Length: 305
Image (cartoon, rainbow, N blue to C red; front, side, top):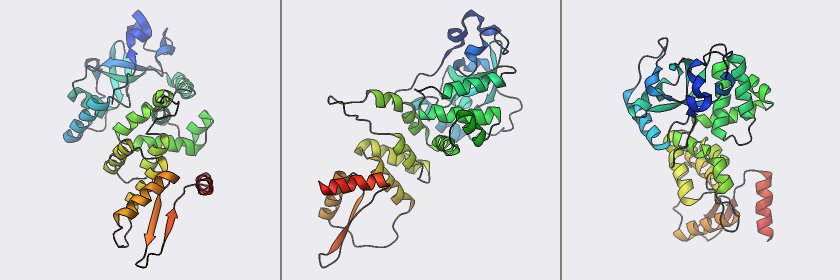
């Protein structure tokens, strides 16, 4: 997966005055607050008041490998003083980036007394139409972490329901490789079409929500890879996730290959999980699962064709 470019250098954002912008009253401060800038790792010092002093080296190496593959998903946060920067949050990402051999890292830059300007910048950013789901999620998280707001307060400021904010924040529990896929979701949905104008997008927000029902990262990544390889629909993904989370405990007779093939054919036709049960006398039943009223109406329409 190609790494997504994130942020510009300070000189590109502020020009020759980059070193002089340190407070919200300084000229050009409004261009910096709320934006993502690329900061040299050599210009960043760690926070001396960081309460966490022990970092698992194996975990850092694993994170460094992920950064090498998909890049930095969430920028760190630093406080600016001239052209030097003090780390506020993201020390694991900072250390892992050093291990990965990066020269610079994307960062949100804080200035002195910028709380009100920062809130306005984040809210303005959240109102953009081209914002991807992970950008939405991290912007909400920034409002909570850096401004001390609750989910209810974030929802109120954005004019959204609390459940919407909760659903965005849940996306941050997904592995980095899946978050990277979601960061490119808007671009994919705009351009991945075949000659007939039919979308060929394989992974969507619906798939991501289904993966959140799985108990751990390993299961999420395995099903994610299966989605890409097999082109699973959202409903098929939901069915697989449910099976992983609540596996059947009742022992049953193994199904014949012909029955399994028929289930697959019917599942593809209805775009829904299909189960066929047969007894020893050749009798049985066909079960078609659905997740909503709309889903049910679609299946009924298929049956009436």
